[in-house]
Length: 114
Image 1 (cartoon, one colour):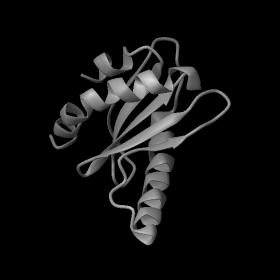
Image 2: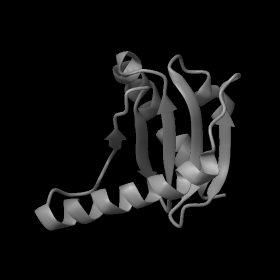
Image 3: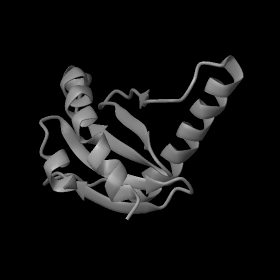
């Protein structure tokens, strides 16, 4: 199923990452060289920090975290006891990617639990 997700225009890689930072499953678009093991660990820390901020401000559950870089954003979304990490080629594709990714989240949450 991750191959389908990485086929969404704009997504360069996608991974299901455990809450302790280990990549459970991943897929990368052809021609991309992304160290998802490293990124998964670092991204999990970002998600944990966002969850702490949410608790501090009483804003409810974190539904998605985005970190924007010159070369394109990284999205994180909690799914059960894991999270989905997606790297995106440019901010121009962000709206479409977020919309498409939401459709896959229930299936990705199911995959994270197996």
